[in-house]
Length: 297
Image 1 (cartoon, rainbow, N blue to C red):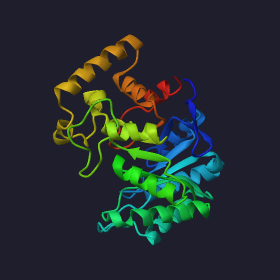
Image 2: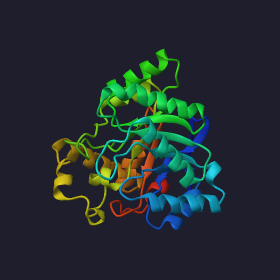
Image 3: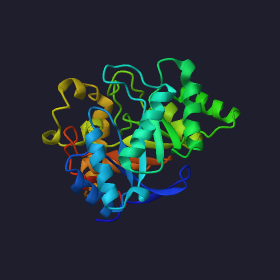
């Protein structure tokens, strides 16, 4: 098995592996050992749904193996409170950033990202808060998830006219070779032509989930988890996607790869930088070695 390929990430002035392991992963120690042995150096920290304990375990492992300073972290901040209240005010964002730093035992975070606030008037306040954390060396850069291309352009225009650092990346669950009729969750933004064009034009890195719950048409039926109910599968069932699956199936046969691998390979080779987020957990049952096998190509 080849080492995971590295690409230059100009926003971070670092080389980064084209795959990022989601920290909330089952068999944490085993998965981290394997990932880093293959040359991976990027972790995604989701921090939702009770994942704090798993992230603490990851932080301890990194510290014990002296990997903290060598690892690139992409962390979600500003997630809702347990009672569903929005937490995108300056104090909450600061709290999340400092919490991640403490759990991961690092002086700074490389990328932090958040969903858009419900009140568009607070967009610019959010940018000011994040930039202040860049100045204080708590973070290196900031990014957006579920912001439309127009919202991202507005944010960048504000940053440029204010003399502030631009965002570095888009984080998405909606990037696939197939085209869903609806998003994974209500309110999620499709990764459509407008976002593709924004990523290219604005030189944004795309951190995209390539694991199974986001790519269900490309995994064997017997490996689809409990999460992929009939309702969640239905959003993918179109004639266009049936054609895409047939086309990639033929390509998989000709290359001697699995359908899952051909889909992932296609997603990782784009006219913009893509970091593929992978996970091995209750909703992603596939063998991560399938991703590692093609990540050195």
